Length: 326
Length: 195
Image 1 (cartoon, helix red, strand yellow):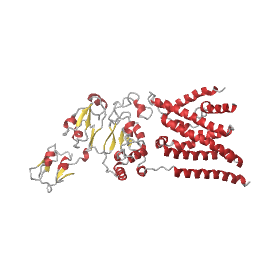
Image 2 (image 1 turned 135 degrees about the horizontal axis):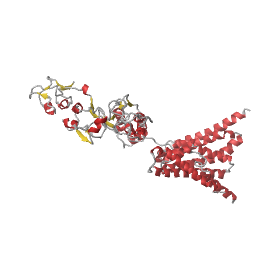
Image 3 (image 1 turned 120 degrees about the horizontal axis):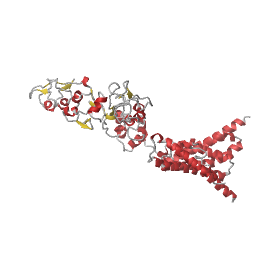
Image 4 (image 1 turned 90 degrees about the horizontal axis):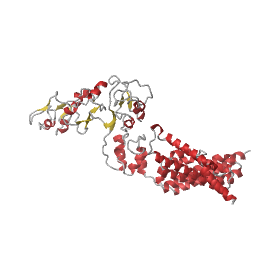
């Protein structure tokens, strides 16, 4: 009776013990040195495995970092904070990477952009776009069925009640999953805090756009003409803004007849010269492309408020830091 | 002579007729998981071959030297899993030491050999068929070669599928499953090989 219990226990326990001992010896003999750096880097990774860095998951990125093949600034999720930590472990200088966010290049909401038919089908932009390019009359516009929403691992993109996807910039990590998912290819990765963004993706001619959407770009190229620094170029009926050249004067957004260039016009700032600090060097006067600064040499300068667009060029140029943006 | 003939039947039978993946349907997880590239499939096959041969040998000893004398052969499954798990651990250490590239490529599937039912299947079948030691080991090796054959064949097909124009809805796993099914049907043709 008793032996029915202890024989199996002893037998299996003994087997287990034997194998355990064998493995313990083997693990000592076959120990592999693991790169400490790599382990530390792995622990740092956000673990989102989004692939935004271009490596297969966080582990792959950590391995590439440890080998010195990857740049510390590649992780879009960890951002500058993680980059500094990585740089510390690797003992290299961190170079500030440009953090990017997704931008949906369409704001043709239901009331502004017409539909060409009523869609009753699978709630998926791919499915919808299979039939006549989707229900929206504009073949380039956002279908608003949330394929990007489902692709986002960070809950940073949502379809608003008017049927257009909108990115929450605070949550967006710039992994570009939504951009890959969009069948209309109207999500672009753009640098964070761009002063002006083109919110239309339509390559159609002006008349065709006008008939179907109230906020679509009609390709009038007014923005390109009004830009004081020639940062806007027209390509296939759409303005392309060179973010390096753009000074953020927002004139293009102001002039756009269809409001297809977005800018934070309400919070537009004005430059103000502090007369006590100004030495009248005229550097700001020369820097201003709008002739919005007046004043004589060696005299304190003043900004003409009506002409100032708040681009901040003068603030950057002033050798005495005597100009504020308010 | 008859004995050698029998051995040959066991090996050929395990490789072709009763192929573990395609006609017994054991070990499907690594079959589908590690069959993306021929080189990793080959590596997986080698690892499984080693584990299966060693597991066959050791479980035979465990069965007839420990379990039966003690009268606890009802503990067979647990004891065999213990053997297989320890072996896989050992193989993992060896591969990690000898070939980090292969270790990376096999990834999560290496520990998964532990739960590869083909390995447990072969050890239990050995006992059920009442094979002797040589037959047991040969059956283990044959079964593993069959597994390797199936997984390498599938990997070869999948490498070609990557460049084929597969309809969107069929891409990835659906087409792989169809291919695996067709392979199983094809292997059914070996059923009358030894009449």
